[in-house]
Image (cartoon, rainbow, N blue to C red):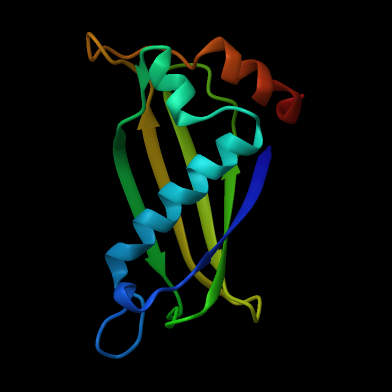
Length: 136
C-alpha cells in the first residue's frame, strides 16, 4: 500500500458565505494531493505527459462528514490500495483537520491513456518501478 500526506491551507475564496469550504473545492485538494504523492516517488504528471501518457479522471466520489473552515490547515491523506496492473488507477483520499477529525473522504478513478490516440494503456514502466516496492 502506498500512502502519502499533503497539507493544504483553506483560502477565503474556497469558502461560502458561512466560512465553510464549498463542496466542489475538495476536488482540487484531491488533485493536488495526487500530484504530490507521485512527486514524492520522484516522478511527476509532467514526466508522464512527456512520455505521451495522460490520466483523465473517469469517476469521482466524495463523502462530506464535517465542515472544513477558512484558514484550517488540512491534511489530505492519499492512498493507493492496489498496484495498478491495467489501464485504471484508483486513489483514496481522507481529509483531516488539525484536531485529527476526519472531514471528508474521496475516491478518484483515472485511466492511463495514450495522448495521441486517446486509447487506454498501462502505467508507464518508470512509475510502476517506483510503486512496486510498496506492494511486495
